[in-house]
Image (cartoon, rainbow, N blue to C red):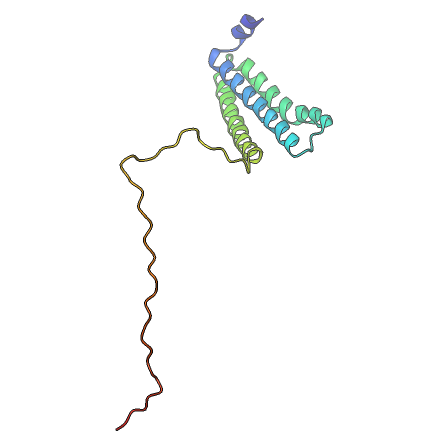
Length: 142
């Protein structure tokens, strides 16, 4: 079956199609994780996601991928649409990842410090010196 699909679709078209499908799947996973984190996951909304996000993107790309070998213009259209869909889902994935990991503090396991710089001692605090009192009420004689 795989060899039949490969005979219908060029290798670069197949790789592009798999990449777009992978991004759509990652978008789906991040959406589910985000809704679980926010405690508003609703199993009944999954068919709506398939209807609104999967079918329009995947269906159109599959049709264009199948006919991209027959016509050069359809191949160019396929890659243009695939690039647009890739950009859209990458932006959405970054947004969802930011929302999912918002507030988490991730520390790097590696710390980088310069070895040639020694810590500077804190400047010593001096106590204020008492100033002599000045008599302002002295009268000036002429």
